[in-house]
Length: 382
Image (cartoon, rainbow, N blue to C red):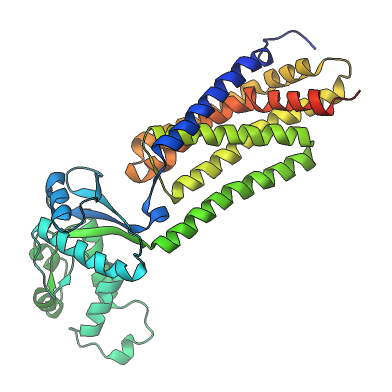
């Protein structure tokens, strides 16, 4: 084996740094705690968009005045789109979801200036509901037997046209005249003028989780990560050897621990997409580790008299360019998602951003040294 840069030679320094970072991460999690989303503590989450710009302080005051003093409100884009999270309380269950939704609806009406009415809101409706309303009213007096069994009628065409035009106008019609200009039938125009109105806000998303369901979600999230690590341990033990598996698993524990510490440090919210991100980190990091391990195994078959640490170093050097190129190309994509993917994807992309960096590092400096330690101290042939 020819001489090359001694990457494996700094393993003690690398492991010392990793142990320090892991200890800091454990302390951060223990002292600051994980900021859990409504999926894990129960509560409701709304994403709302107002027709006119709304001051976030006005929105916070409205929620506080209506009994939601601890509402978490984040501005998404511009001055008229927000995400509101209401954490659940002990004893709250799904039955309360509708009551909270009604209270939140009144807050949105108060902030936007929209009045309570029984009229059909053309700014909030989707094409299916609008088509159903028109079919039920049947202003064109179409024979109902002709509409039975028909998936698409003239009313579907009208509804599709109205909803598509609204999307092009930024999700809101500003006047009823804009709607009526899209319709050619006088009967439909009269119906829309009499029975419909234009709201001043729209709910883009509404999710409610009861505490009991949230507790179940927490258990499933933890179980998913444990099962993934267990399956990896079995797979690597069968595919390689148990000492390889120990290195792979401890490297993954290293990655998850440090990523979680960074997650807590930057006060990110732990949600279900974040669980998916952590599982992705586990799979991604393992992939790099397996490439290095496979090369170590191949080189061990070729050379019999070369010391194990030198074989490992050569294997790392041989796979280094592949590892770095793969990680960098993936990292570029995640960076773009993090900065330009919007608030909805930021929580998912942040752990990936940290995890890819830490996972690449552990594939080089953690997994192989642990394998070397176990092999030398427990499996070395006498």
